[in-house]
Image (cartoon, rainbow, N blue to C red; front, side):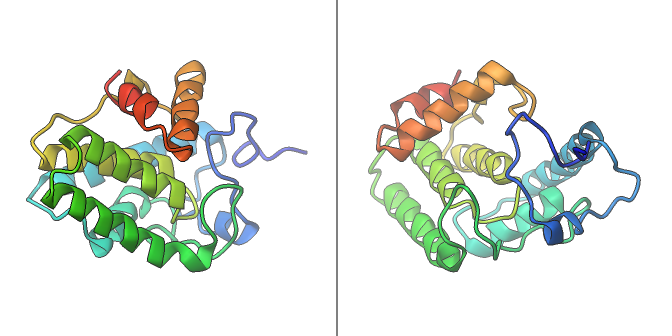
Length: 196
């Protein structure tokens, strides 16, 4: 029998291992919409925290703390890199190195104006979601990081299709297609989607 909390046919969330599922903190959550709501409230708190003072977005410790603040009221593993394989992302043992490489590349792009600010932020966001460093929440995390970096570079936050991508069928499909194009070294569709 399907679990109404974890078994969903929308493919919006990366499947969690049984051990990761046990990391759910609020005991009242039994349905997917309750989980989504609790996570969204937690993400709102994280955004207020990130906005409260100037932060260095291109820092591994900041990124882990941001994920922890986005999901720490909901999941005990928030902010900790995953240790298990996924259907997407790099192998778990490569996460630390790949996140640091993404940070180093983005710092280079900023320092040398390699790309326009929007493209730097979108490329960095894409690299993070491609690495898939955390057990879950990687898409929401990477989009928020993209927004924060865009703002740090003097741009407005992205609109990301103007929809909550957790529950937005067609918009989410366009986002996934744009990510797949970026995986194949065509950043154009993701740049367009980010400002759509």
